[in-house]
Length: 504
Image (cartoon, rainbow, N blue to C red):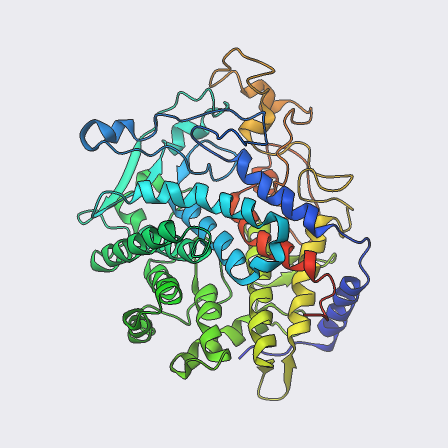
């Protein structure tokens, strides 16, 4: 269990949480939600639909898959660019789809008028993932040569770098990316169960096929495709967590006993309790335990009690004044901080799990026991929601710099984000092609980006001083990603309807 820390640390935590209850300004979470969904339109690859709202983007990568298609006829158009580059990385894209879907599944009613556009954002990903898994025994996991792409600064509409296609198969396994893809398709099937039953059934059927492939041919995709996927999206934590994660989503979507038995049978072998202070595109352990613990808290399945215990320990590791975990810190301004790049990916994903778990606890009239050998404490669902809301409010501007880290939200936000399409003139403003190296002048310019990537949340402060240089070159802090925004959708939807954490 998480150990309790010093009185001084507790006092600091009281200050942090007090700031949360006396927010600097009332936020329009509904507007932030709308903008956060709009961001995904700026990340679209392929032929853009007539209702595209970010009009400075145009069609791009409309022949993706052609290289593989010479012999297979595969169509890999569509999907999302992961960040400020022009590569389609399947691993983070699938995680993005899973998290967007989870937000809609658990907080769908809170999306209100934005529910349909959030579903559209999910579908842009799941349609692509269906294409990427259309060939039995194969999962296409990346389109684009990352090293060649990153050597250029050019618009996606202009890009002329190789659109190399990478795949995993029986001879070159990738259980991690395949099982995450299965999770995304299974979660998506729940999202579309009422809105499009036929599509929902196709998603679930494909999810089962892809999961079976992932489990039968075990191995990490960075072992099969190291030169292509590393260092951008290497699997640093192994494929075992994705197998449990995929099984958990298939169980939730299908309620089939085989997935329940698979989870319990493989709980120890696949490390369900490992590294539970992590949750992101590479490490699913905390998410697995929170997702499965719902079964226990709802009184449906004591079979999974150990997962609830793991989830409790994870939650305790995040709470200010209770956490003693060395990898979980809070900045003086109250931002959850983990050592590494793109800190906001941790802020949004961990805050999302806090909110989800508080929801499960509230329905079960339960609390989180956090104890040590000498003392004990129990955190209420309200406390969890306050911590999550404090992080959302920090992103939206309640921080020492009084800066929103969401582009286009509030009076002050990042202007020089590390994003090719945003930082280069649009095709309508500059019809002539801008070559690979010609874009360097725009990259180095101190001028604000000409195209507003509305809703993009950047990596944000990456140290404990709450500092943020608004500079393209500092990509660790100025680059937005789809997996920063994905868990934020559920958070913003919930707080748009429940701005007071004490109310549920």
